[in-house]
Amino acid sequence: MTSPRKLHIKSYGCQMNVYDAQRMVDTLAPEGFVETASAEDADFVILNTCHIREKASEKVYSELGRLRTMKEEAARDGRQVNIAVAGCVAQAEGEEIIRRAPVVDIVVGPQSYHHLPQLLDRARRDGRALETEFPVEDKFGFLPAPKPDAIRARGISAFVTVQEGCDKFCTFCVVPYTRGAEVSRPIAKVVDDVKRLVDNGVREITLIGQNVNAYHGEGPDGKSWPLGKLLDHLAGIEGVLRLRYSTSHPLDVDDSLIESHRDNPALMPFVHLPVQSGSDRILAAMNRRHTAAEYLDVIERFRRARQDIAFSSDFIVGFPGETAQDFAATLALVTQIGYAAAYSFKYSPRPGTPAADMQETVSQAEMEERLQRLQHLIDSQQSAFNLAAIGTTVDVLFERGARKEGQIVGRTAFLQPAHVMASPDIIGKILPVHVESLERYSLLGHLATPAYAAQPAESRMTTGA
Ligand code: 5AD
Ligand code: SF4
Image (tube, rainbow, N blue to C red; front, side):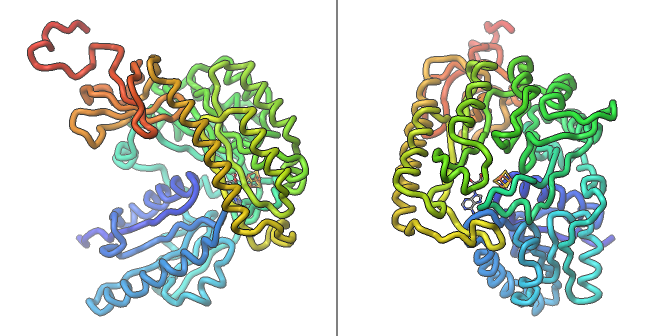
């Protein structure tokens, strides 16, 4: 028997990349690969890249410089190391990577991960291999199911991809180019994945997709099902305690989704709904296809359906043409809505997108200043949201032991980490927690159900179930 070959994947960017990395592990496991945490002792290193912001490709080249040294050292010891670049930088700049970085053996776009074993063979035979086409076949159909052990190692909460790609073409965004047109997986395949996960201990499922609420997979009745109907269907699977989805576009929020938030208790009342800007002028230039008022209407529809619902969002500051007045409109929108969390980014032109041809008008210093102001406002909203939990009792799904001995950590409906002292038996359960204090972003408290609380030995016998 040959000893297992070691695989190291370094992922950048979004949840989709995290999920894809797991699928690459699953694809390569039958070839005898096991995962390793460090690149140094790997036989195969994959950089799973992200292209959405910043000069991500430059980061890739500097990482490749380090890997070249490593590869050369391994070769001196008689060990062959293969290097692959995967993800959206591979998709967008594959040919250039092959030209600029001789250290790279394989370039593979997100549509072709199921071909990794063949690409590895091809690279060994021909020296290099590049695959960045958008195949006509359904890549989802080819990705192997994860092995039970692999699922168990991943814990209580898991992602399931339900759709990929995007047809929205926001002018700043590379996703429609790197991930291609919107494709939804059929209901039956999603259900299979979810059942396999819950059979192996997963209790919380997050449905992911670049524009997840554009979902329109084929249902068992042959009709196209919207996301809300899928979520309701999944809530009926035994063992599914919590459902989430990410990321949504405001225009694709339909009544099925709102109704699911109203009627489906497993669907968590926490929605990531990016708006990017509060200025109608900038929203139009971004091709977001809605105004600030229309976004507020969508928020209102959610709130009417579910009173305790909370939101997070994404913002871009310094989009070409953004004036001080436009930025003020963004601050005003944030103030009006009150987010539980939000992410904000400085605009960065992405080659090949329409906005990259627009004249940039906001200096780096100005962008930095706007980013600081927006982040300060968002931080204060997030703190207020977290502080409001103190003194209340909230449901927590417990996930794992914390660093501190005897402490178990889980998450609230709003993804706030919550720590209690308790027995590990509570992992995988949702239990009420009385919140006492806040430590940075974490809630600290004690179980409101005494049955599971950690007790001193002498008092344990007196505690009823
Ligand atoms: N510049 C800055 N931020 C961007 N995002 C996407 N493209 C860009 C870009 N070119 C941000 C958006 C999006 C999030 C995933 O990344 O806010 O919602
Ligand atoms: Fe990009 Fe999201 Fe716009 Fe699609 S909806 S183009 S993924 S920002």
